[in-house]
Image (tube, rainbow, N blue to C red; front, side, top):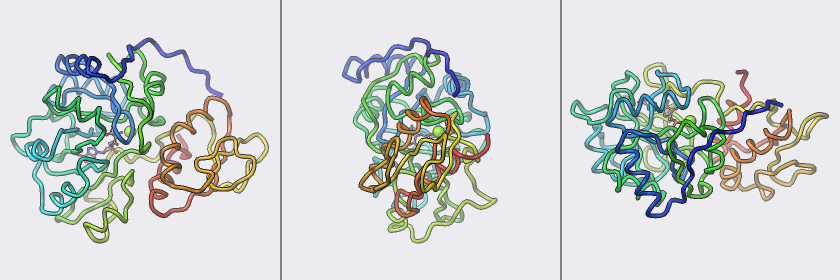
Length: 317
Ligand code: TXA
Ligand code: MG
């Protein structure tokens, strides 16, 4: 088991009006603030301030070639940063505010720093639905760049305590809004010849998107998401997937009606519940055991995104 040094102190404040006001002041001054969204906690900075955006990469230890998602209060603000095609408009109308990220061509007059795009001509945009994220975006009156609030390559944070464990001492304030309801990152959609491409499966299932777009293409050589590296979401513990049972030395992370689970993502076999529990249970087990066996998870619905995260959590580092 890896022993971690205790996190350095970072102020954690409840996300009441005072907390949101202080967060907005810090962000406007170029500082970093972690805040809850409906998917996972984000590590936020003023997306129009290059130095503040650079500080995100430093705090996460994130490679500079991996671009960031820009969060906006509404579609109108999003249209000021990127060029929307008709399909993107339809997706935004259907899923925003919510757990959908659209990767679109940057407008020449986009106000956000070139650093958020990591050298690409595109920019990733999302209008979050979480009331605290929405209130913060309205208060700060500028777009916020926010990757998941974890150290690069590690498990995403779904609570303020997890953010403190990942980034304590490297962020100026953590806004505590409790556990994030969905627990999985947004679904990322790009476009190739105006056809929708699934760049990252996420909290909105493929079938829901395809009801709007028709069949999604997978990422090809032409368009891709630099963040989709094989090893990611990685616990320190060894991870074995599609396990019927735990072997000796392993603890079972169960799904459905399985015996002897150390923890169970959803005893009743509900994928939404499993998605909400995935990162926090992986993190809990990682603190206590050296090897984790995970029950098979169906590939349907949210299972696509859950299996994507598990596969990359299990990949060799
Ligand atoms: O739910 C979420 O999306 C959370 C919350 C905080 O909004 N954010 C999040 O950010 O997951 P991050 O940085 O951990 O993941 C962003 C993903 C990465 O895989 C990145 O490579 C991809 O989006 N991405 C960002 N900008 C892109 C671009 N211009 N082109 C292609 N992929 C992009
Ligand atoms: Mg991430």
